[in-house]
Image (tube, rainbow, N blue to C red; front, side, top):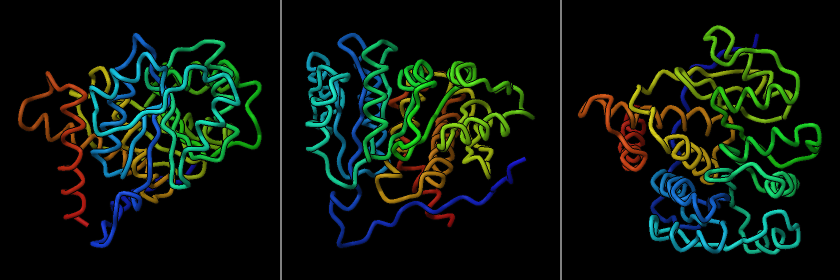
Length: 288
């Protein structure tokens, strides 16, 4: 059994002489013309968590709508994610302090399979969620041994698809089995795994953290997109992958607890959640 970690890492410093380039860039990759909210919400969360810049890389028809929802982001129109040359040219525009948040609003498709394969070969740290995970499950037998630094953020259903693809038998809904389930997935993919749900588990295959914040208010569309943006933002600001995932799930749940304390566990939207992330960061910073 992997060792359990209980210590929360501090939030990244904000030096007085810093600028937006100090805090990295998050590039959200996902969305479709009929699925514009998810990448925009992930972008909002990344900015609310402190990333200096956020770009949305999506289909040209979806991009103007995404930027209307989150006007503080900028855009990278990318019509064909399965075209390696198109993706390469898009990535050439990115800076070294860049983290990819891949999957919000992405559907599983042959184009998605190819796109995920291309992304995994590049150097940028990648947080993979939602449709990105479903596309990964479809190509799990072709998962490259040499791949980018990776965080996987499955809910139990997405975990099940990945587990079936690689032959893992652990039950992601059994509270006693969840740490071992997350560790098995982490070891197979060489990734940090965030197994979402009641008491979200973060594992690197050797150690795990069981989150204690959060409440049923999180059972709302888009809350997973917010978590993806939060974790990606913390990595972009210089945190290690495991620490960013641990702190990300803690802050995400704490923001939801703030909502529930004032309003009860009903009616929170993903945007409400994102808007409370700065308050969660402030409380954690003051408590350290």
